[in-house]
Image 1 (tube, helix red, strand yellow):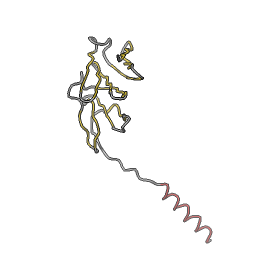
Image 2 (tube, rainbow, N blue to C red):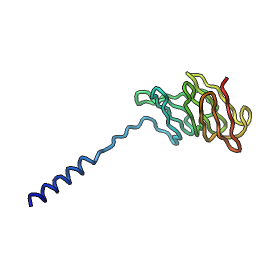
Image 3 (cartoon, rainbow, N blue to C red):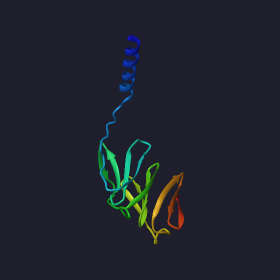
Image 4 (cartoon, rainbow, N blue to C red):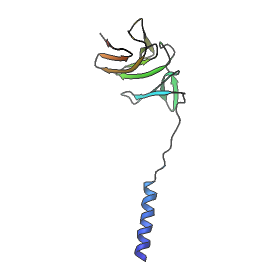
Length: 137
């Protein structure tokens, strides 16, 4: 009987030790967040459709979307110092407070950027009907 009580007590102790409650903290509220990434310094960035690009600092979101071609962002990629964003209507490159914009149909072929990928000095923009390559010189 004593052995049964010991095994039962150990069983419930193990269950209690395995049960860990996660604590979630809201750092950015948006209708449609579409991406999250970290740079090499562990800074966290979030994009959203209708909201644009945000840097998360000390648990608070700071908008970096004062000049992108659009705020309906669907994708982004961090490549060293540059943050490439894409969405409906075009995309852009953000670097230390400065935006370089690419208007869909004018600067780049296609209408919406669904994915971005960077490696070395090149960035690929996957778009409707095609894929564009941007080479940094």
